Length: 351
Image (cartoon, rainbow, N blue to C red):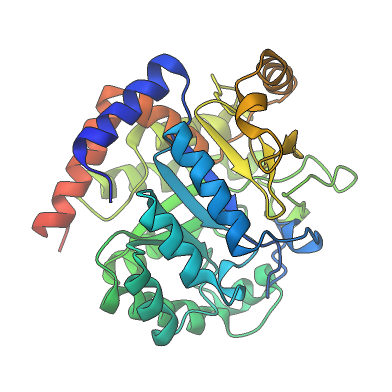
């Protein structure tokens, strides 16, 4: 559990010295679903064993990284997931686990919370059961996700976040999804879906499906929906996104442009299941954390490689990366997120 002082020092290091603040740690690429916007389930990387993950944790601790998101694939497919959480918790990291929610059970959540997990993210893109099953390539997803939210609410003390990938399929539903999430005591994270430009360009982690794209004709509806979301934010609904991120999201829908001052590979980076390290999960790994990582990470060659990759990237709307940058750089966003935390502690969200 991070103290306020540790958090403050982490922000200073990230802002002024480009020190890593946030790490996405893929513990598996295996998944029990086949979501339309995702290519991860198609990949078959070797997974590090617990001892190798501990060695990685020591390295990340040496870098003074603050936050680790345990992700996949579906992390709950790993039988040792509670051991992984306990290990990272023992090293003092702030931890969040991302899951599709379909494998959540009372026994697993009890074991995870006992291991030190406080924060969890569960995916839910629509309240329409037929559409959700189509997106995920499986059956009865909505019932399983709702059950997972109820279980998490009963046993977890931290933030329960519901990740909503905004697409042409669900834009009109967003206010209703937010109300549903709010009713469960969870927080909505509203992020434009990240897709490859076309089906011929199959990305490293992200997929493509034409039904999820937006048409120009949809812009009036998008404007209307985002205006309502901003009003809901003002009324203290449980929406975890910063106002600035929501405004930038709307600008993206208006213009189709999403370039920004990305600091991938410095303030945040990705570790893949086999230990491969990449600036973010759009790119394949540059090297492996098990092989002279600190020397390589701090080298001029690495800095040059990362700079070259960023210059060639058209940008993204991936919430984890953009919100991290805003949290580090933007005072208003930090104050807003602090207010969100205080509302949670005092129970003063919208009733």
